[in-house]
Structures are given as structure tokens and as C-alpha cells.
Image: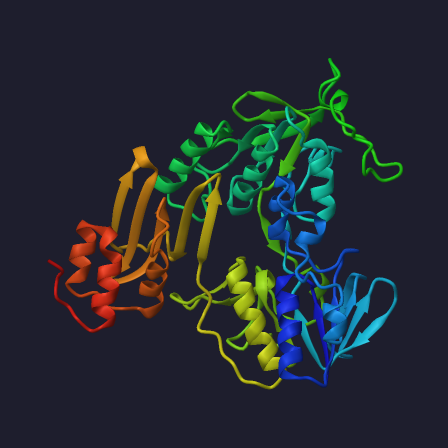
Length: 441
């Protein structure tokens, strides 16, 4: 059996290792699109913080790991897929035959339609090469403007702040992490960041970026920008970032963290059905037999609603990689459905959201806010079943909330108690999972 995996991030690597375990005799080839060993994008902030070096970003630290497992790594990008001939075409002209194919191409940054977005000095924070560029400029005192305060943006901002830069964050939404947090929680995260010295503008758009005339040596007089630079690489000068509120910000570096979208470009004209991502069934198989998808690129059935969604989080990617690989190896395994499981550390403030954290029309919710101590909890109900939750400042037993949602427990009288005091979720889970309906004293 000849297995080919397009994508060498965590999804592709977990799938390859699972395939080797389930199918010791197969040929396994993993295709990446960067001249790097497989690494974790989620490790980039830790690299920028100085906690790890580049080797620490690698998914597997043993340089012989893939050789020992007889997993072939190719760092030549895939150009297109020919599902009729069962081949993957690489952009160096090679063609790889496959019996089973896994699409694990993940996400790619969504480029905002802003004049000047492609100027030198404007970077995403997505690749190791991005990280190297950012590390050279983001020195103490550098003026950094970050566009976007979503999940990835909040992780990046902590790394930037730790480098001693003057950081300003611009977010279009009316709160931070608007696609993960309720208004109450997102607003508290903003206040927290401001207390930590980060300037945050919400409900604000960047309308343009342009080069600025250097009036002083500025940052370029303080750092050795030549260190680690490629030959003929253009040196960015200062930039001016225009906002729709009339403000103009001076910047030495602009970070674009305005979201991601599924990386499905190579699937055009393949017959593989796509919408926001690659449509897959409970086995992670596409509409083309023998072709699977997993991770940020997969559009799979949501746990509560049955709708197909792209759920770009690492726990989901790991689960889908295992399921896809086992099915590719002939071991029938079904997904129970994808579910939002978000846990975020923003400069020491822990937040999380699960399931349908935004609630549903006609559903009840219980909300508790302790703004002074940066604690927040909200539970969302459908009837007497918890279907989603948002928490801030809670670190103990938060996983129980996930259990409440995934078990679909009917709370009976416990719902009334939780509506009055949502912090009793552990008591409710224990009582109802044991079949009891009585109230706690």
C-alpha cells in the first residue's frame, strides 16, 4: 500500500506515525512546502519569547525519527492532485503515485485587502521564516503594530510584549478574541492586556499602510538588521499605519494576524468537494474513495448541530489525523463529531470556550462576572442540556464543562441551580452522571 500525505504539520505527522503503527509494510510519503524539518507553528511564539531555539520547534527532536520509521519526507510543494490517475504532482515536475491520499494542508493566513499590506516590514507570523524576520526587528523599544486579536493574535501579542516592544493591537471586532469569546469575556481580556502595557483598539480598522520618511535613526539605528539576513533582502524602513478613527501610528514592524482560511488551492478541478474546507464524512474520507482530509483543512460534522464546519484547533486536528490514518490502514474508526475546544493564555490570563459557546436562539444562559478579579463564567443551554460555555480566570476543573457538553446530560433540577450559580458545574456533572436529580445542600 502506498500512502501519500500532503502536509507535514502536526496533522500529517500524527497520521504518518499512526499509519506506520497500523500498517508496518506500507510506503509512507509526507510532503511539506518549506525547507524545514516538520515543526509546530504553535511553537513560534515560544521561539520569539526566547524559551526555545529553532530545533525546539521541531515536532520530533530525534533527527533519525522519520528515517527509523521509514517515513519519507519531501520538502517540495505539491502543485496539484490528479484523482483520476491517483497521483500528486510536485512543483519540480515529479509525480507521486498513491493508493490512499491524505490532505493535511492546514490553513494559510488570510490577507486583509489593505493598501500597503505587501510592503517590506509587514509580516504574518506563520512560518519559521516569518519568525526569523520578526525576531530581527522586534527588539526592545521597537514600535510594533499588530492587526488582529483573535486566538492566534493573542498568542503572538504575548510573545511580542515579552520582547520589550511598544505594542499596539488593532481589532475590527468589538472585543478581543471575538470568534472564541463572548463580549463579557473578550472585553475583560482587553482590559487585562491594557493593564499589562499593550495598547488595544477594538471596533477599529486599518485603512492603509505606507512607508514613512525616517526622521531619526529610530529602530534601524539600534539593531543589527544584517544579522541573519538573506542576500539582497530588502530592509524595511519605518511605516505609517492609518486607522479608520483618524489616528496614524508609526511602526517599525507590522504583524498581520487577521485570521486564516483552509489551504485548498491545489484541489481545484480535482473533483474533491470543498466549501470552506474539504468536505469529509465521519471516517474523514472525501467524496473521492481513497482520499481523506484532516485538520484545519477538513470541514467535518459538528458535534452538537450536525452542520459541517472547519474547526481549526490542534486537539481536533490530532483526533482527525488518528481517525483518517486508521481508516486508511483499514481499521474502521468513526468520528463523534468535531467540537470547539479553545484554551488560551493571554499574558497569564487563562480563558476557554467549548461547544456552542455563543449560545443558540431561544436558549437560556447563566452568566457570572467578577471584573475586579478578571473572572468570568457563562453556560449556554438548550433545554436542560449544557451545549456551550465560556470561562475566564478559571483553571480548576474546567475540563468538566467539556464533559457536561459531550455527555449531553439532562440536568433536570440541576439546571435551575446552575442558572443561579454556574460555578456549581462540577457538582451538577457528578450528580447527573450518576443518575441523580437531587439538589445539593
